[in-house]
Amino acid sequence: MISVDNQYNFEISLKLLENLKGQGLIKKLNEGDILFQEEQAVREIPIILSGSVKIFQVDEEYREILLYYLKPGEACIMSFLGGLFNDKSKLKAIANEESEILILPAYKAGMLLKDYPEWTEYIFRVYYQRFKELLDIVNSVAFKKMDERLLTFLQDRAGILNQTQIEITHEELANELGTARVVISRLLKQMEKEGLVELGRNRITLL
Image (cartoon, rainbow, N blue to C red):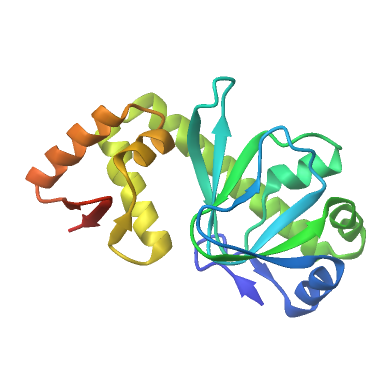
């Protein structure tokens, strides 16, 4: 089975996984590759087999804010719902690293709900996790200062990549957190003085 080592323990049995693979196809992405874009018709549901994918919300002025990551064993619930109701994507997905994705046709995902109670339970678990993460985003934006959000972002990113060194520019950080580059640069310099990070060229190391 594939699973995520967290409190929600997303698991897909080998039997169901083989069925899913038989219904879809496996796609490999390099870091920065786009999995899907906003306003794109939803006809496929991605399930992460390895690596990780960043999910963004994009506004009318094409500004982006990072919502959450999809990790191994997880599926995009918005793609599932969009495909189920023949809707367009409201989000944008970009590979955070080299990743392997199982692409499942949306109509087949709906049909599997009737035959696999395990698949139904899995979808509800993913939905609950995404809802909780979005509540965390609302809480963070509404009540946390930008320096707290920045540190949490870096810690999360390091945890997903399983390394303390993060290759990212100040501009990219600003875009993902929905703020200005000058704000990120000022906060990172302050964090460096406090001994929280070490800054390099397009590189941040958590200490």
